[in-house]
Length: 193
Image (cartoon, rainbow, N blue to C red; front, side, top):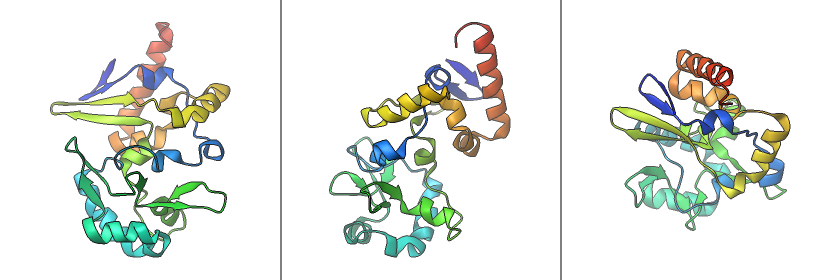
């Protein structure tokens, strides 16, 4: 473990290789699991604000869930998460003609239709950030659906923290990320990486 400010970072974040391979996984992280994606309280208003922009991109089932319970709910562990359809699909998931899924919010952002990218937990995946009061924990979440991303990351020799540079900066800031890079260099010098 490495600590930067009040954030404890698992060594897996430095050691593991990762590069999303959407052509292989088809975006399964948006549709598998037993709960929606974690959402920060201040993101709820952003999710609600983007709804009119993406409403027609959402499935009828997703629109019905949103009408009934809203864009988020509290899961069995007490976490605020995106609402889901049929016990698995995030309400913001859409499908392309090849059967792959994508985030309607991210698509709208890339098309310049909104200024919100998507929940930071989605942007950070497969990193999960735990909040433990006086400190936060940054951990790598291993999941079988990401096997192709692990293989591609190994092939390209891309460490997880480098693959997730943009969302890590979004979450913790540029100065923090710079310290993370310095920590990686020190770990290499000491033979841990």
